[in-house]
Image 1: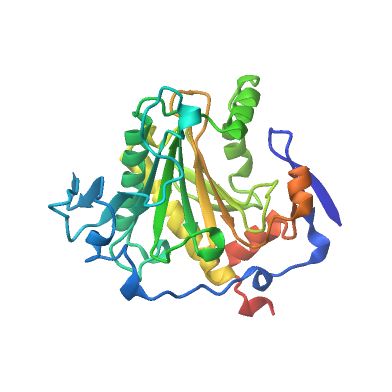
Image 2: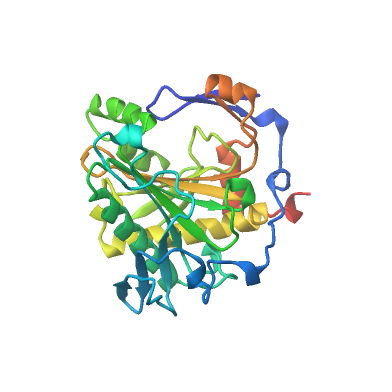
Length: 326
């Protein structure tokens, strides 16, 4: 039996089509393998990219120059060679395409991925996220910094070497404005209510001292996962190192489960956060690429999800892999 489900607090809907009865193996995809020798993100290829704007090395944050490229780094942040937006005059920011586009190379090693990062590597990546987001939010005219990760070609990653991106915009996305309008009309934070609702229920996936992870009730895609801080925090810059590191631990733990159950799927994750808006509650949304957006979704903005989130959580919590469900 299918269900029409409503978002926790927005007028958004999804259709959960449980009758289609899909298994984790139906959503699995084979990862593409690229030749590491040609990868410009690997250590030793620093001269193949623009000079880094921030280089994390042995507890320091440094900056490249054309004459002095820093070697033996841990995290490297470079301008995107093909930027969606670019810095320039901000007299008419909307017309000029003003903004910034950066690539965060998460490790010098081609064979690393978030699921085999050490805790220390993940901590440093979270710190780099926080630093770079706040760096761009301080730029004149910037109102939103989109921080996201595309993993796998199907998710939009043009290079296999693990990396994230950020795009700094001179506007707040309309979808986020819509959220804010609803949040401002309520007496308390709806995301804080979601934390209370989703802790230790059938959709719960992971919990530590500062974060919960769960399969949202109105999941747009199969195996969608949300991460929420337990305390009301609006953006990465407001997080202590302890809270920030607990986010990294949650991501690494949940991704390891997802990788096991879906056999290394392509995925996107996106941070939703606002700097000068105390009422907003940061959230991270992870969506495996398990289906394509088709005519119905484009026509209605209503997604058809063939994997009930409760069932997805059961698979992930039990570690049921592709082989175990055949």
